[in-house]
Amino acid sequence: MTYVGWNWKAGGAAVSNSNGSITSSVSASTKAGFSIVGYTGTGANATVGHGLSSAPELIIVKRRDNGSGATSWKTGSSLLTSWTYRLKLNDTNDQNSESDVFNDTAPTNTVFSLGTDVMVNGSGGTFISYCFHSVPGYSKVGSYVGNGNADGTFVFTGFRPAWVMIKKITATGNWILIDAERSAFNLADDRLIPNSTSTEAESNGIDMLSNGFKTRSTDAQTSTSGATFIYLAFAEAPFKFANAR
Image 1 (cartoon, rainbow, N blue to C red):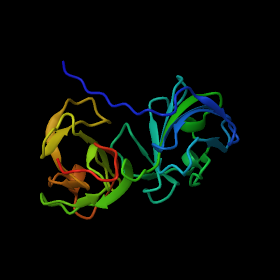
Image 2: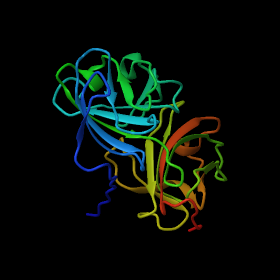
Image 3: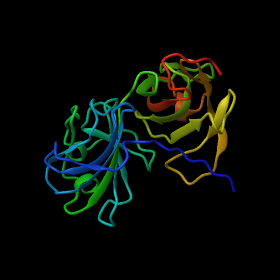
Image 4: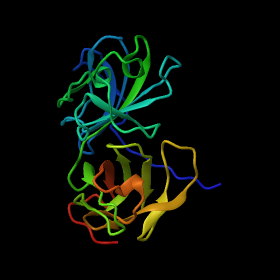
C-alpha cells in the first residue's frame, strides 16, 4: 500500500483563549494564517477565539465526541454567498443556507461565530476547528469561474502551488485534491477525493505554474462552464518570488 500525508504546523502547545463567549484552546501560527481551535459547545449562539491576526477565510469544524452530527465536517468560507451558507467536507453538496452553523456572522480578527447547530455547537459536545486565511506568497483561499474547456481557467495565487484543494459551490461535486508530491510534473492529475473512500485516479488535471494554476480538464468537478469553485492552495516554495517548475 502507498500513502500520502499533509501536515500544517500551527503554534505548538495550545493555550487558553478567552476572546469569545466560549473559552477555547488554541494553537495558532499568525505568520502562516492557520490555527487549530478546540472548544466545548454550549447549545446557544456563541463566539470562539481563533488566535489569528486576521479574520479566517475558511473554517472547518468537526464534532469529536459521539453526539448528534459527529459525522459531518461543517465548512464555512468568506468565498461562499455569505456566512449563512456552509459546505461539508464529507459530502458533494453545493453551498447550502444554514444560518445556525456560523450564526450568519462573518468572523472578525479575534473570533468566529457559532449558532445552535449540534454539529458545531451542541451543548456539552467537544469540537475541533481549523481556521485559515491567505498569506501572500504562502497560501491562498480563493475562487474562480470554470470555462468548461481543457484550455481551462487560469487562477492566480501569487506562488507556485504544492497543494491545491478545489470544490464547486454552485452545484454538487466532489472535493478534488492535487499535490506536487504525487504529481511531480505537469499535467498534475493524480487526484484524491476527500469526501470519498476512493483511491487515487488520474483525472481533473491542473498545471502548477509559477504564479498559480490552470485547469486542464473539461470535467465538471473542476471546470464546469460558468460554475464557481473555491480553493485552498499552499506554496511549494513559500517565498514572494518563485520559479516555474
